[in-house]
Image (cartoon, rainbow, N blue to C red; front, top):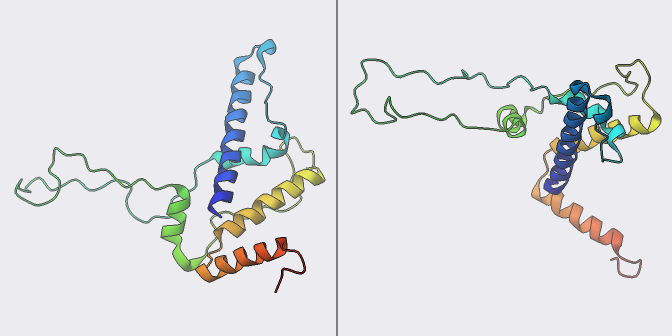
Length: 168
């Protein structure tokens, strides 16, 4: 599962990098220097373009730490007034897993299958299938698994690769 998350993340970041290059070349105004993406499947990943906005925070904690009171003495344990206190940096994925916990509330709504593009043209069947596969993979990666379920999945995968005479 971790490997699949890495692959999906790499695909997303590569697409976003290529998309940024295309946007930058179009905004420059030079008609001769329009960037042509190198990814063969760039046109199929346009559904990722709207996912660059940051999600709202699930935390109810204040975004900044309160400053120490003015009458606090320097002998108190903890950071002094001159030291910078760093807040923990959490990625959006780890934040949603740690804060949301077992409540299993989805952080993203699954879009309807028949989406309209910004230009008004409907998605092709292949694009709809790619979007559906992406959402199914996202949902599968979010479902918690026990060690036993993971072990059973590994055994089942190995048994499928065996010939009929080798299977028990």
